[in-house]
Amino acid sequence: MGLVVKSWAVDNAPVDELGNYVVIKCRQEGLISFVLSLVGIDPVTTLMAHPDRIEFIEASLNGVKRRIIRVSRSRRLSTAFTKPLKEILVFIAIVSDCKRNHG
Image (cartoon, rainbow, N blue to C red; front, side, top):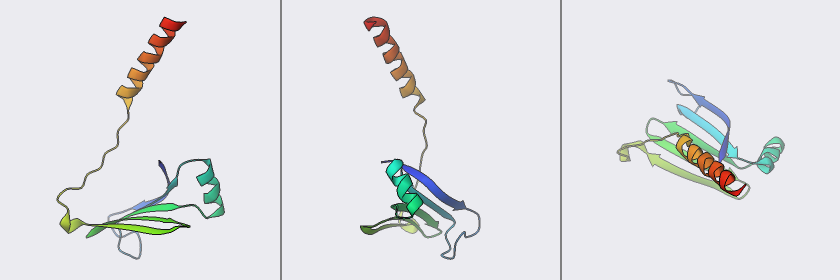
């Protein structure tokens, strides 16, 4: 399941009334989720970063799931973004080889 960013706010000062410095709201990817977002009943995933905690909130018609990570309790937080260039090149090479061998 992938997510599509609906809105985001990041600043050196709090961006909302709760004192969060990062607020990112996402919806699920896909046509059905897009149509539901137009109507306003789509499931929303929110990430909020406060100086002492990070919160993940998943809200849908089924209810709300909230996960809180206390920053004082974590030793290391990291994230990554990668582009699968190597995998794409290997895939292209395999497909080209198959086309050459089979027709």
